[in-house]
Image (cartoon, rainbow, N blue to C red; front, side):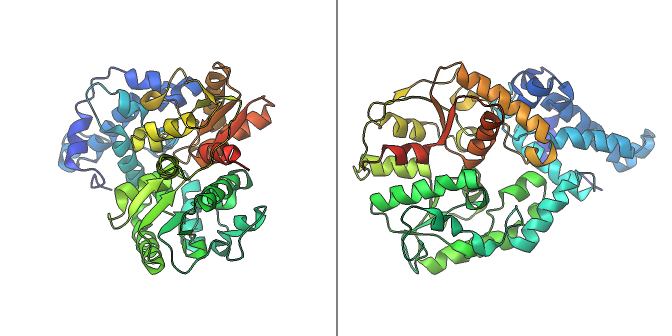
Length: 395
């Protein structure tokens, strides 16, 4: 074991923590569980202790004992029971890059063999099937067959200017599959030259990032880049904020990349999307990876306000302060109960607005919030922004 998973900036930033605890005040895991051990300030304190006990000569000089298995497990549990929403980083008064620190910490724990064993399932699924759910990767584009009027080519074109990168969740989960169906029809109605990659689309790498498995990322990145080159593409389109953020931060700038909200905004400005009036009141949930992660707050709101007749009300906590839905950071795999508790908090806040529906721009947010709403029989519609635009398309 060593401290090589951290860069010098991170090692210095840890010492900047003032123990002010404002990070705990905004942490969705802490507020849902009422467990302060899940807070950023507690995690930094634990990490400092880990690094001290590893410190070779100094550790021996001060007779520091290595962490016991029980101590390692306790610390690992706090690290992986986190949605990686980044709200602690947003609020930190001394500007510590906490989300990057958590990602390095997860990688450290994997390298140190102190991590939830479900991480092995993520690793094996990706290695064997090229997607995080262990589904047949040849079936990535089978959702097209469930569309009312699927095209004969199944959107599998030899060449196209735009590639729609579907993502694992939207490709395989029935609840989320309505999102690519909606987006594909919007693109069709707007005469966009696009294609899918189908089985040639591999996981973008985001589950690896959250699981501390970035050692296996490079072949996935290289494969996806080559698949786009073969299509002659100029632009990659994502409805998944996590895929979009992964390409922004870990892929070379070879292609123009756009989230669906940005792409649809362009189409609306060009008057290529025929929209009819909708009589409903909606609120908007900023996905963590699109909002705090990519700083995209305006495009989705512009799309919503472009739909005639729609009444829009903001959540009490919105934009960079928006509270996580509970669906990030692989939390559902590690602690499904805590994920549901966080989703419950989110739904309560949404209901306080009196909106008929909550709109978001992330299939994982849709899946997490819709699962909670259905299980608890709550009268609230949960829609991705592509579904909202699809509903507003002139017939």
